[in-house]
Length: 122
Image (cartoon, rainbow, N blue to C red; front, side, top):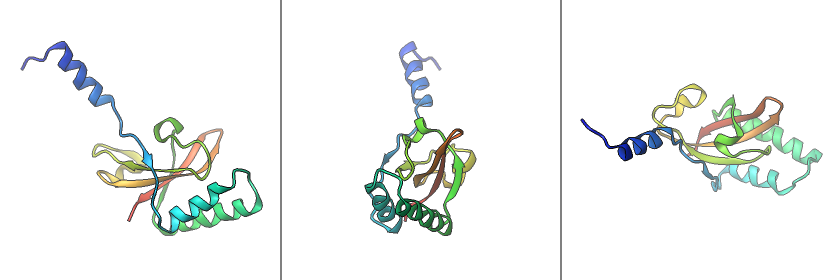
């Protein structure tokens, strides 16, 4: 089969594209907690307690934790979240969610990059 140079460029660009994160607008328990945490832009005792409670809720809800990359999900601050369609070819921490829409939450951001948690949106 013969492909023109233009066709080959399109195939390569499609293969290299990764799904883009979408804004998280879910109004479930986790979404409401995240909105409350993000209202206050400074770290107060109330915000720290809120993040600890959110972490407990995420663990009980079956979310998985992993070290991620800010540029992949666009999450740079603790408490930020997005929706992400996991590709069918995904491996690693998100491999369990292939072909599903998940919520990705930034739990910690430090020297090693952000620690994220992901779980299915119900």
